[in-house]
Image (cartoon, rainbow, N blue to C red; front, side, top):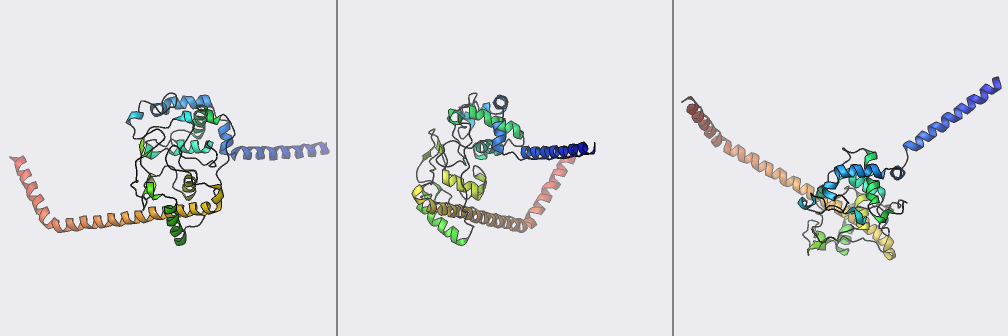
Length: 301
């Protein structure tokens, strides 16, 4: 009996270890794997409640509210998205790209963030439904992420190299010599709509996160459906990788410098207003008192 008890005790310990391992694996399951279990049917229900007003019943970007927006809503039937972190030679975006676009929204395009309204599972269900609207996602395998490595630390030397690369890559033609625009020519997207390049000195207007990694991905892949090209040439792979990181640091310097300049301007304006109030107060306060006294007399009479 003693021997049987020992065996049972060992088996129960093994079962407990296996259960803990299984729960841990499920808890730390990658998002891409979670996305594979999402429900297209439930995603359609969510879409029909929250999305059709702008994107249309069939996802073609022709909803009733589309005419009131500055930019046409995304046409999901072509399967193309502006922000992608898949490799440049892969036209399909990653599932995570769609998930993050839904979660964080597109403030410059009028799309609100849904992360505080829809649960994570509901957002993954919505991803599954959007993928079903195009043939581009027939291959269920999620593409690998873009290799974002070799980060060059922010430094004065990198910023100087980035300024040279910025001009060498002809970025000023659209973004202007200092990132503020205007473009040298009228730009249109693939739908024929007039678009304006991003003001690189106003980081809060960027579509997508304002992080070095996100900007590197945008420079590498370009922005589909717009004139913003991908900056990838296999022949100059190593050179371009360094140039892209230097351009990222230069853009961060542009935004930081412009924000400091705007902060200084706000401070100067505040000082001017305070000085003006201090100078005019001795004259303006007696005037207000007289006006108040006249109003009180008028009320009594």
